[in-house]
Amino acid sequence: MKILLPVDGSELSLAAVRFAIDLATKGLQVEAVLANVQEASNLYELLVAHDPEVLDRVAAEAGVHTLQAARALLDAQGLAYEMEVARGDPAHTLVEIAERFGCDMIAMGARGNSALRSAMLGSVSNEVLHASAVPVVIVKAPADLGDEG
Image (tube, rainbow, N blue to C red; front, side, top):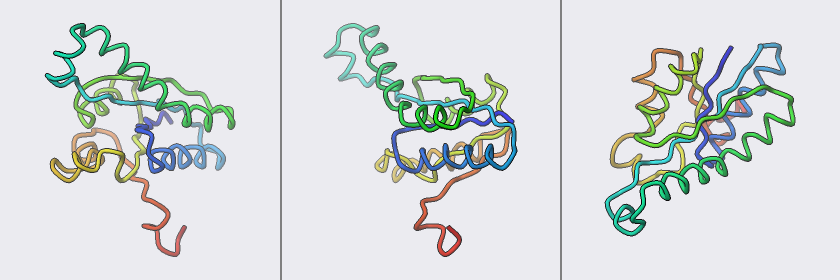
């Protein structure tokens, strides 16, 4: 099963990676796609940088850096993975990545690092849940799980 694992640097996104690892240790054949979506540049960044290529390079480097902890978890378990760093609206971009890579499922944290955006626009996980054609597993924080976990 190919699982898209969106990683934004939050502990919950790494909990989703651990969830996929747990599935693999229980016998499921897991292939992971690690994804990080950098939001598009705003007008101020474009005016200050003067060069869109610089902004693209910085965003790509930030995305790869954000994926490091997830890569280390998967490498430690010997699980195969692919990576994608993209720019744009996080929810819709993640759905596009899942389609492009032929993912069978998306596993992601209940909320990530963008608290302000979540409060104003609805959470990325909620948007993905409604826009995805494949099942979406929302991984909650251990405190949210009550006595189960």
